Amino acid sequence: MTNSPILDPFSRLDPRALPALRALFDRVGFDEKSLEAVLPPGLNGNATTEGAAPMVLRALDETTPLSLLIRLFLLTVPVPAESLRELFGESLLAALTAGGLLEAAPGGLVCPVIVHPTRGFYIVYDTLAAKRSPVAKYLVMGVGTSSLAPANAAPRRHYRRALDVGCGGGFQSFHLAAHCDEVVGLDINPRALNLGRVAARLNRAANIDFRLSNFYAEVAGETFDLIVSNPPFVISPETEFHYRDGGLGADRVTETVIRGAPQHLAEGGIAVIICEWAVLKGASPSDRLRQWVAGNGCDVWVSTSKGEDLPSYAMSWLRSYRAHLSPEEFHHTYNRWLDYYDDLHMAAIQTGLVVLRKRAADNWFYLDEAPPVIRGRWGETLLQLLDIHTLLHQATIDELLDQPYQLARAARLRHVYQQSGNRWTSTEAEIFLEEPLPYSGRIDQYTAGLLARCDGTVPLRELIAAMGEAVGVSFAEIVEAALPILRGLLARGYLIPASLLPPGPEPSAA
Image (cartoon, rainbow, N blue to C red):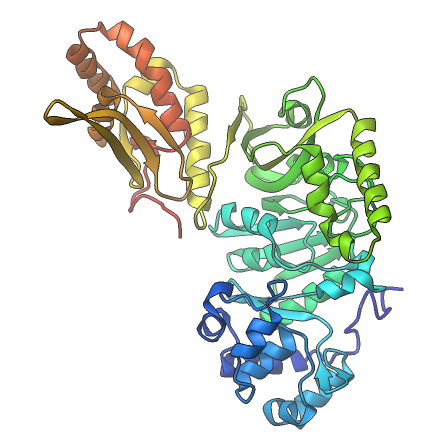
């Protein structure tokens, strides 16, 4: 069955055609920069945005090679065969047609999948129309918000071996292939793996091994330096789509991925997992997650969004049903989802980025709410935060006081003033980070003054002593008052211990 037209739609495609197609892409400039230049500004270079086709078609000059490629591979609309013969050449056009990457349709030839340039490489995935076709269960999705979270957070240092769990069409794998010697991509969906193999040839990525696997089954006994996962974590009563419904019920996909990662991490290895889990009635949002990671030999750093209420969550996933269900059917489906949550005694759903670092020592657990927006790629910042939390977990108070700290380069201070007599008087101060994790919080003028002196040369003990003298408080009292605040600033990356500063410029978002 693996050679069926659904699971392996391009099994007849001559592998030599893909390097030739990539060469054509390079020659024409079928890339992100060129797309931004020709597409309407509101689309931000994304021609596949739902409902954007009329805007894109109106903006395109139908006679240019780039416009033909946009119509063919992004809008998946028919292009006259003669135009493609002139662009591709007789040999390449014949190979792509014989291999199924081009199909006959009224008005010319059409591509049955989307070939999308993104992040410097190409991904191959299904159109939204495929949700209502025999392909539906094996549908391969493009890049969404959940795809970007681990891609941006994963450290981009050189690693020997990396693992992508629930790889889909390979979006994470292609990121990993750029800085890892060997990448293994695991998925239970054969169609996703086969589209990933097509994209890998387009990307000239020969170091990716896509394996059909039920979670970690096909890497038993293997360890990796970096694991990234964006699994099908949606909590629902459905089993309709591989990309969305893990098929295990409740949040057991998330649990399986998180529980299984530590045994496949080499010492010092890191796992970055975007996922959702159930918040049960009478329990805290982190209870289930804490159970899954207890005693797993890893430090655990978690960044969560605000928990989502169940009616809103169900409705957000069911919007796509409205197009092909009657109002009565839609109402029944919605109630079935909510009844399912009631049966599981759920109160809400929590989304989070879970980071595990394998470390043979006394491990720590830290959970914080993510800032509203995270900017850029921040893998180096993540590594630095893991080291800071290890220091906070291990160091004595004296050890924390006796070393210097440097204020983060992205830290900024904002004052609010009000009129007082004939002067402006500061009423409050807000410290915030511009990038990549733009946290913010209020601080008093004395703490602001202390932070201004954190240049990586003066031990914290001296700075706190000076602050105590300024306010007329003993050293012991000022330490007791100031240290929790400073710990919080360290935990979020406002302050960097001098011992953890890199030899070059301070890391920031790419």
